[in-house]
Length: 185
Picture 1 (cartoon, rainbow, N blue to C red):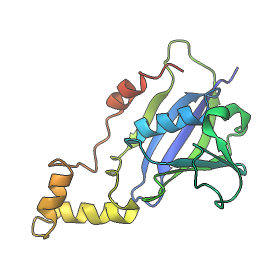
Picture 2 (picture 1 turned 45 degrees about the vertical axis):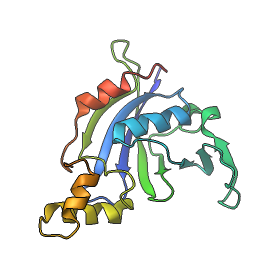
Picture 3 (picture 1 turned 30 degrees about the vertical axis):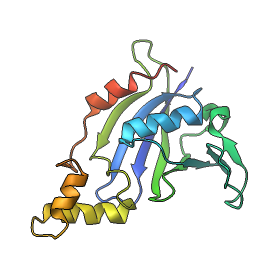
Picture 4 (picture 1 turned 180 degrees about the horizontal axis):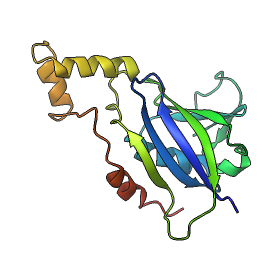
């Protein structure tokens, strides 16, 4: 039985692309997937989010949601297997409506569960996640230019904001999997 879904998550607007490839059990709900994505990408949490898949808006219900286009389904009540059925499917995940970190998620494969493997797991990725609250993709690339240029008037301030360092090339799959190992669903 194909109980595992292989997903590729790509942060839209990044060049070269910032991406992760994960394996998740198809029975998890979208709230659980949200937490897996936060961990895998490197986001800290604390912002609103929404999945858009097959005409569904799935997320955490909030007071001022009216007028955003269709009913928002509670992410804790909708499972992946109730919506995803084809390896050609793509869907969107937006994290932090202020910075609008938009992710494209591709369903790549359905796999048999390996009893020797722990899920969720990250099986690949490239590049470091942008720092939160840096102003979205455009702010991220501005930040990179500022920290590269020691003569820039905001260089010192931005490095302090980043706690002294930020390596845009860094991605540690082992660390991500260590963090994912805390999930027991």
